[in-house]
Image (tube, rainbow, N blue to C red; front, side, top):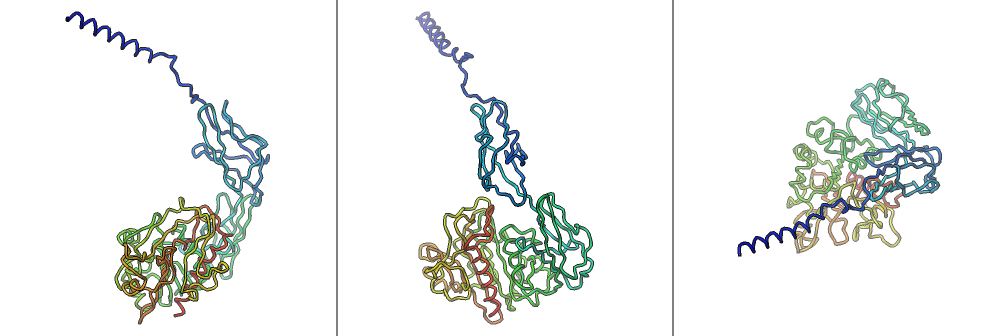
Length: 467
């Protein structure tokens, strides 16, 4: 019996080897062709404009004059790795008013290259005097305003200037200039030239301030910087200050009637602990801020700055907005249509005057149109008996102490007021996701409704300071 079992084992082993050995044959190879290069090695448009290739980021940048039509540019040169094929060929005409993607394929491998057009530009990006006083730049008007203490000699100020890449500016950065009168600075690069008019304003006590977490305006995130720059260009005797400035008493606020804080946090915040962690400088300045507020200074609090009303003691129940969220700038939503919030019952309020309205829609405020990129950053009050904490608007008014002025599509309160009382100033809060200053990668200059954001802000400032 033992002999029979041994023979059976040998037979099974031999069978296994028969089925296993063919797996090692050199004939069993993949048909995928994965060993070819897929580089785009040269690229030219309209016979004159060669691309600069960045292999690391798979991009090609083509520089063209400041004013140049890129809607129909012809591919006049393209070279790729040996054996590779590109998805476009010489003679193709493409619209380069937006980035185009070219695929380079070699066998079964490929790479995508993004083609970007870069117009010559000559811009002043930052302007500072004596390395201490930052200028507010209006790129559309080519103006720069610098506010300095009245004790500083305007006849001998040294500008520190940064420009767009490769540009040259005159008078030069580091050269002392007399700013008794406005001074023109000319910046140039290749075909681009721009003239900026710089005005220096001696002032000690601002009438209005934009307050932020950053030490300077230039250090603000893009959303906040856009808002602050608007204020300094549109509100008389306005100034940027930091919460650290407030806490240390570095700025004379004796003449200040209004303080605006617009707080953006990528990804949003949804409770007071997250607010405290995101804005420690504002929390640290509370003693001084409460003193200013209780002595009559008015506040405009927008986006997540609306949490600050509870910190200041403006609310009855100490609560912050209960329904909050937000996205990040670079991955924000591209809108498919115009966005708005509702103002039914408050159409005549000063906050909503002189806005661009749609005919027949007097109960809606539109703030941007289709194609805008928004973070939809929202700090609102959910009203309802389900989970919001306030069953009705009347209960919210009674328990919280605010006055509702604007609503979301589901009835949430997105704009509200804490009226001035006794010696205390008034507060306007706007927490709607429609209230958005900055659209990453989108030119909103021609947006039909986006100017309403500035008009709402101006109305709020005028309303608060006229009380």
